[in-house]
Amino acid sequence: MRKLIISSVRDSIQHQIWSSPGSELLQHLLSRGARISVFAGGVRDTILAEECGLPQVRPRDWDIGISHISREEFEGILNEQGGTKNRYGGYKLFSKTSQSWELWRQEDTVGLKKTKSPFSIENVLRSFVLSCNAIAFDIDKGHICDHGALRSIVLCELTILEDAIMHDCALFAAKALTLAFRRPLKLSTVSENFVRKNLEIQNLVHEFGKAYSIAPISDGPEADRQKICRTSI
Image (tube, rainbow, N blue to C red):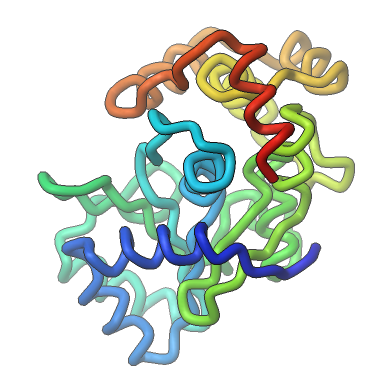
């Protein structure tokens, strides 16, 4: 895992997060000693928009991981904010004026709990399984933690992390296929085999339903969209 700063991505995420109705919640969590990072799709799609020039790419929601705060305090704060429990043990916050937020305790990341893996930012990213999602943005420090997502974007290739903390294979097979359809990322041979082996129709329907409730397909033929990625970062 490496840490780096991409100014355009930092500024875009900070602006979108801190201008959101949920900013007061994050300020409160920070004041309680919590650490906060934005993970996966929101960071990936901001890179595609800011660094690759794909104007129609907009994060469907923000996946926000909170650490260094007790489960009891975290749940109490989110319940007070009207959060709705999701199927992964975190909370969803809705807004009529901005994207929804999915918040969870990083220490309780579902992949870590299922595999009994110790908590660390690197292990959280490894539990995301897909290369293009193995990325996080530290809200307070402004840097990116990358565990293979930038390489995935540069190569326009979606693959399975070599050191993935593997769980819920059927779910990640569906995520891989929908991402390859929606974003300029071609499935690698490894991920194609992974999808063939593990895909289940109910997960595919669920992922497509989430994807097209808000987020559009990237404009342009796949080859053109991939060419943009290769020449941008």
